[in-house]
Image (tube, rainbow, N blue to C red):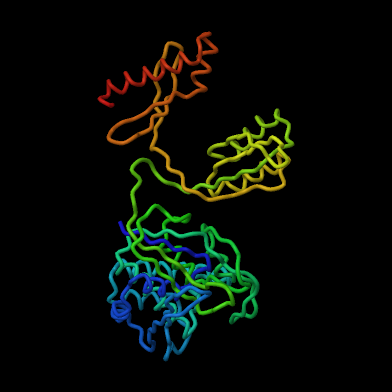
Amino acid sequence: MTQLYFDCFSGVSGDMILGALVDAGLPFKDLVRGLRALPADGYVLKSKKVIRGGLHATKVDVVVRDGFRSPVPLSRVQRIIASSRLPAPVKDLSREVFERLARAEGVAHRVSPSEVQFHEVGVVDSLVDVTGSVLGCHLLGVDRASASSVNLGSGVMDSAHGRLPVPGPAVALLTRGVPVYSAGPVRELTTPTGLALLSTLVQEYGPLPLMRPTAIGYGAGAADPDGWPNVLRIFLGESIPASLGDTETVVQIETNLDDLHPQAYETVMDRVFAAGALDVTLTPVIMKHGRPGIVLAALASREKAEAVAGVMFRETTTLGVRLQEMGRRVLRRRIESVRTRGGMVRVKVAEIGEGGTKAAPEYQDCKRIAEQTGRPVREVMEEAVLAYRKQAQGKGKK
């Protein structure tokens, strides 16, 4: 499976995506030839090598010689794409990109998407950027795409509607569901077209996935800020399927503590779990000046990370927490119930490949039976595992 990864450390724009695809090996002449299927004249596509902040990159420009004579509504853009000879998947994704753009612009200007008007010259540029980027991915045989968090930039920018904060209204609306941040030069780094393209092409956001890269491409942005590599980097290659389990992106939230009363840790852990943590640990460490301390660490989904960090701030003495995105591989699992002498026990069953499984009884169920019967909890757990094995054998399982 061909995997594409967008490293958006300096934002993303349509021309940056085009440049990165060409830089990674997309034949420029194939791109130009493919775009002839689009019924849009009055432009020339140009490619050149540039340097941005010490990085060599490819800059692709859409030079518009003759734009539309009046603003163009979404319906006309969709008709242009639909009437083209582009491959059907390219048409579908390109139309989706413009629908995203129109929805965002519509909300920003308080009009319906059908009332959004794309500017005369800008619509040709956007048409080529959007259809060219989608076509480029198609020509490279991309099966799956993912991306890093997106750098939006900061400060203010000039627009047709005056000076606006970065990100502009359309980009701000397009960030829904996309992990974003602000760093680097004080300027706009992500454009509406770029973010609409990215959010349409990408299936997930996170760190570089497990893959075997065959090409790396750098697509240059129009701006060349002093001392900053204004490029989009992409990794193209073959994905490496996990031999076992599913890989997901989680956030690790942790902090060092050396002045919290030990009796408080139980409550802290309970409340961190209640906030949505997937796992919570306490690790003894030696801190500066030889003081003993504890590292409180939790794993959570991106959606729950802020809530977990909030609990750590409220419930402990810490003044800061560390957050780091990482991949986590988990075995596929299911819950089955088995009968023991003291009652029913839930058993967590995980698949370990080639039809094999491993089972772990639910501790709280075993503890409850042990307290009711006076038996050692270890004995109840062993009985539950044996009961599961007999039950599995009866179903023809390993």
